[in-house]
Length: 112
Image 1: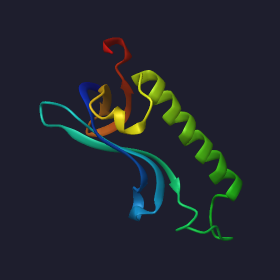
Image 2: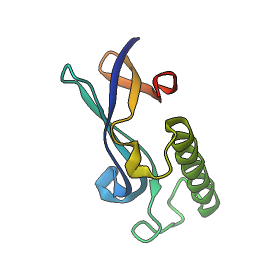
Image 3: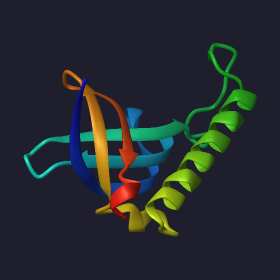
Image 4: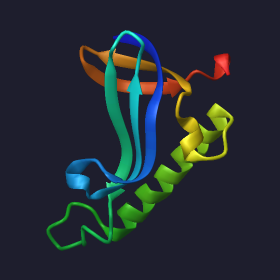
């Protein structure tokens, strides 16, 4: 595992991720030494992807995931000491990688 310091380069709430059909938080993280990676906390948008009997998920599990996404955003806003998603841009982070795979990232509260 390797840790890298960086910042939130872009952040948005809306449609994105897989085929642009997932609604949620989408961030791009990057560092001054040229690394960059995208991360998302999102779920299938109900206006684009309707539930069917072939889905592995239920409407209840989608609703639960929506609640988890909002709680995640609330936690990020508190950690960053900001009030809106757009204010997360430029916030310092620490990213943990396994090889080239992002495993997790966190806001560097201790430097804010």
